[in-house]
Length: 530
Image (tube, rainbow, N blue to C red; front, side, top):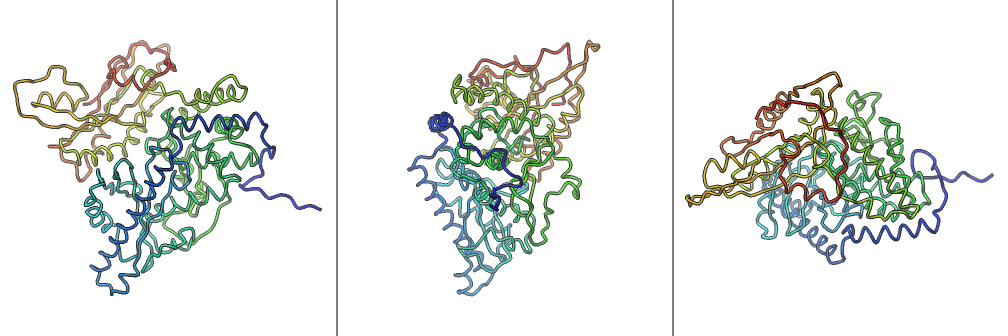
């Protein structure tokens, strides 16, 4: 009696068939298209990234040594303390695009604190002439330092181990490494562990990488690649791709993509997506994802669960609106891929730009402003991280039925010559008449976010007042409660705009024929506190 073949994943595959020659040819065409879109690093670019990581590793070791000396450790203990840099995200998965950032993890021993990371490592980074825009984000879900090394953007998180030293060959995938760690260190470490587990759990790494590059490009062009604003981030998309690869273990990339969107559409959400069975580990402050035990886990709309202990939901930020948008985009993508597979469309059809600024009649414009460049980096990132709270409250306003955040903000620098000009730009308007009399100038930095609103009223209602004042007031109060907020130098403004009032340069982001997805509403009045 022959033994049953074992496959990766929590269930058996849906099909073990191999792809046809035509599907294999379509995969080659896909890879050519992805190359044209810059989804592969050049050899030179890869060398640059490795050099940056080597530099960061040296800086981190110097940082740990400095702190070790300050703590009064012996010369031998200082030399042994170590410290290291690891990667996670797209770079560790091997799917980073040519313009992608590098997600990095700084690991240090127990005598180094997170406070040391933010107060002592920052000066070491800023002292390097090639490093710019160093921005600590201390109070985020996973605290991070963001910066740019020449033209390579880097996110650096940290983990403090319960060990007197951190050697370069430490095994970050050992669950015992979590003993006595706080929640933030566990979350930081799990970025690296999750990436390694995903690669271990897919039947063919090359197929997985090609499919994931395709899905990342599609999600980015459609404006649904953002964990912060309630869509799916890189790890969630990676886990979804890994699961479909498991269900079709012998298929080539084009075949897997042809199945991918239909599976997303037909999946019985909120049933969770797993790529392995639950694993055990030492007790931690983070409870593994379990909706039977944890009430908050039952509220997740499209749960995609990380494979590493302790398991977490990578899609906890998804809202009612963003779920509808993800499913809607997946339905359109499924139709396009069906045409590609039959030879009646090219892969480029899947990557046509979004039409966000044509899709709605009503928008909110959120303008974040500051008169200092570095303060603006901190302030705008703080507001972006908290935008989701505004989106959720807007969903509860009748008759708003869809709240669609645009995933990118627009940075501008303004040269203002008087208070009137400053007031103009911080309210999201352009200076139409330049003041030529004053020689005094002040630089004002703004970042603007947009939210599309689909508003629907009943046929028996002739007029409807849409009261957005409460959610907007609460949101502004929330962001202004930030300890570093200074009303003399920072601003936050929310304006209601009809589509025809949007700045004209936004429509450069819509480069295909507009796909109008809503009907024009009856007469409505909007009430907004500014």
